[in-house]
Image 1 (cartoon, rainbow, N blue to C red):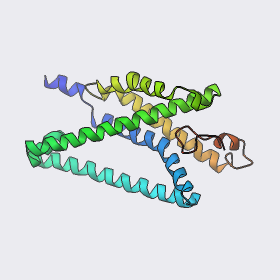
Image 2: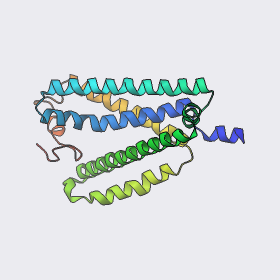
Image 3: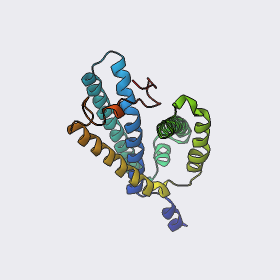
Length: 212
């Protein structure tokens, strides 16, 4: 029974890949839109970018510190899971409240995941079909994402099977970032660059969903 349980749970490396994929994936899609909102609020491009990077580093440090605290709590209480460490630390009654807050955080993350995936899907389809994204069935695509993507994922007993896809997603995000840096340095995104008109196109999840 113990061997079967261990084979169905994620290793540290697999869990790390899933976390990196989620953080990097959401960041790659949401951070540009957030910086654009800051620019629309009156900040210059450099100020908005600087504030975005500072907030990114701040939340990264807070997340890393939280992971370290959870690991330290598990080590001190000689437990192997977050829920067991909480129960051993604050008792079973308060542990229920902590677990409920964790469920609420996961639920809000699922909603955010659904919004990002469906908006990105709408964005990609609009670009591929040369159709305004307003003409696409946005709510239908959201329902499709929930039924075909999120619901099966939530029913998995473990996220271990997602590790290979997470590795592919992390490598894809890194390759995309590298290509963006290369194109930025060679001037492809400048007004006289070959991709200037392409980068002017505004995605559906942006605050200004129409081309400039």
